[in-house]
Amino acid sequence: MTNNFDTAALIAETNATYEGMEQLLLTIDSNLWDKNPAENSWSVGQVMEHILKANSGLKSLFAENIGETNRPADEKVPVIKSVFLDFSTKLDAPGFIIPTEKTHDKQQQLDKMKALKDGTLQLIGSSDLSKTCKGFELPVFGYLTRLEWILFTLFHAQRHTNQIKNIITVIDK
Image (tube, rainbow, N blue to C red; front, side, top):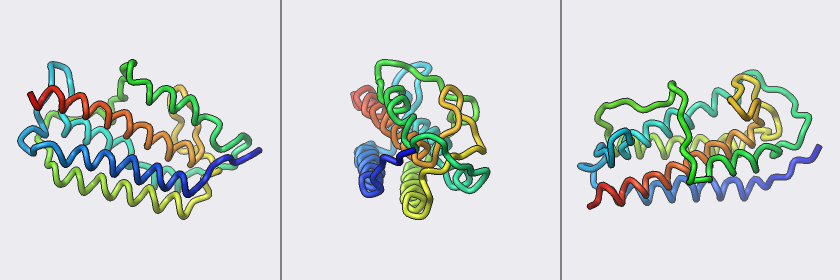
């Protein structure tokens, strides 16, 4: 088994992903945060609620039911990346991470996103990323290593950064 990953590159990718999203979000007027771009679409506030719900369980996932990995720790990364960064396909979120129809506070969501980034960086620096998380089996992908989970959350955030760019082009008109 080989563990083909670079911690410094993973830290850089985490910073770039969340800082890029933050810079984009800072361009959006608070009055437009909950404006839906179209029927059956999410507002920026809803996209952020979804990201925060989906990406904030890493700490507990990393702490519970951890096992050895009998494959390369990054084996599933190419397929995860190809699914999440294929912007031509629509993915359906499971019910427990679908956002609500409430008013969202821009600053509160930005603060939570910063905490999410900081928490991810802490996990990268303090965890054996080759271990498998057996507390939650992801549909289609199965059990992921800690490394794969981190990259899953980054690709997920990158996908929705692209979605937010598309929302901005509609609501800014």
